[in-house]
Image (cartoon, rainbow, N blue to C red; front, side, top):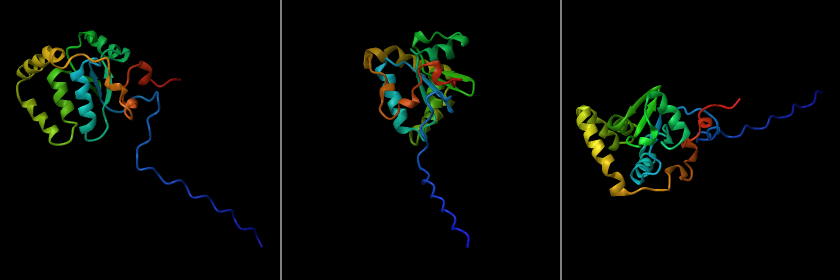
Length: 167
């Protein structure tokens, strides 16, 4: 009589949540570049986090080395702090175009704002610039960066090492 085979342990149940990203893993989705010390911009980032359809965006403060690395080769001074940017698939959008493309990633009814892309860009950008000119006066500056949000820190990238795997 042969010995009974040892039963294999049951595998652990698969989690219904996505695993946390590796600390040095490259972001898999688009990057939203924003003024990390603008109270209005930080509020907007928190709004995006609450209303996005799925967590695909990573957030990069314009004051970070990563923002400088992404913007400088394109002739953009990240210290100007006059625009939000969306970087996706090697393309960079600024001002109203970036804001409306970001709106398209949100749940309804907020994603419907993307329909404003049918308005001529120079009109949209004029409105964007008006808000941009008044944002510090109306909402103030903040030493608090949205990157400190508990449970979301892995989605805020500041260093070049955050997007380049270490060898």
